[in-house]
Figure (tube, rainbow, N blue to C red):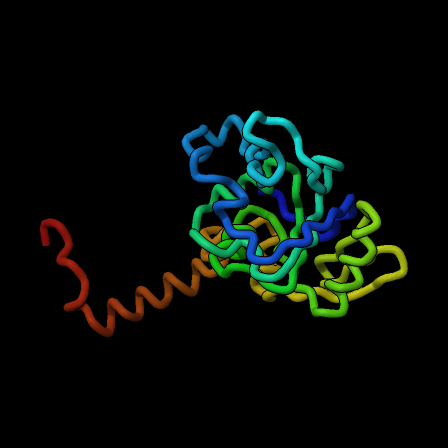
Length: 202
């Protein structure tokens, strides 16, 4: 996974709160292999009618790479496929007042930014995007975004910032501490040898 520190792209507003993972990708589509791409399933039941006809929806009107939406985005089940659907569609960042915890962690592990907005910034972006999609520039190093005359901060855990900038998932992050982990294991083995399984043939 490639890391990133700056992204400028078209943003669209999804003026909904509590968009859960079942809405992001309905469970009936999760039997499809990931290799075929999950982007076409993103928010499927909000974007298409039962006959498959496109509805009036922000993601049908444009092809944004940034989504600005309401609080508690990604709540519900822990399905990582919800993040796959966003990533495969082309979304690089979701900006919202708050996120489901597991969703946000899954997002970072897949290179997708869950940026937290304060109330004033969220309101300003929703007002601007209510007129139609607009370009937003995201600076992951400074944790700031720009949209027209608006220049504002967004919130992100420092460890998640590091993971996104380096393209790391949880395993990659743990590998950065390989020496410390080995030193702890050796010290623990010396302090409590009885806690370790006997070596074969010993």
